[in-house]
Amino acid sequence: SQTIHQWPATLVQPVGSPLSLECTVEGTSNPNLYWYRQAAGRGLQLLFYSVGIGQISSEVPQNLSASRPQDRQFILSSKKLLLSDSGFYLCAWTGGYNSPLHFGNGTRLTVT
Amino acid sequence: TQLLEQSPQFLSIQEGENLTVYCNSSSVFSSLQWYRQEPGEGPVLLVTVVTGGEVKKLKRLTFQFGDARKDSSLHITAAQPGDTGLYLCAGAFYNQGGKLIFGQGTELSVKP
Image (cartoon, rainbow over all chains, first blue to last red; front, side, top):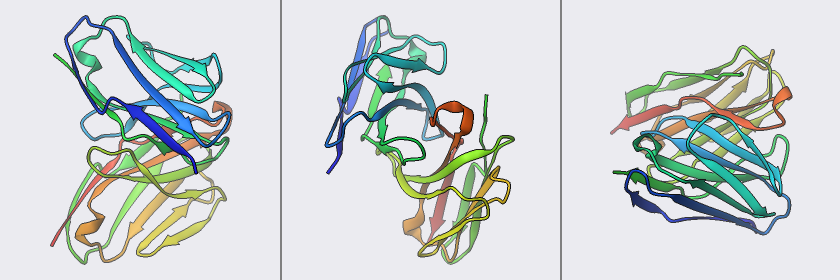
């Protein structure tokens, strides 16, 4: 069966420090991968999505970047965190068009 | 840019009452999904609707997809405290490569 791993679960970082959040998927190949951010338990904002290795689409201009170095690995990064980067970050995968999203358990990021 | 309008944002009701959550867009959905999210976890899929006019039932939950595929509703009959949570609709649009856009969410509280 397919599983998705996302870590760390919680992170507290000072303003100006770098960020690296990692997400891996097991049990499937060539998944579509997504990074979402959720503020205060509200709707999910799509940050990045990827349909293949090295293929990244960015949805909003921001302080973050994403990379997909391997088929089932998706990384969210920042060189210098801002206070506004605080939030709940969720990684997800789908098997393709009209397929449901399968989410990781999220990373709670607090920038101080 | 396609947008989803989800309403209401907050709903607080007594056990046994009925409720309806709405999800609307000015664009046609290729498919629409409903998710439920518990605090500190990723959203979990409830249902996917694809065909205009489609109705799906999941125990006390009834999901409808509008004939024009621009709107959807989630109706809960005789709500129970265990239904408490954040309900999210997510739509895929034809010209967006299958990526899913989320509504703002409906935070439901069912009091015993």
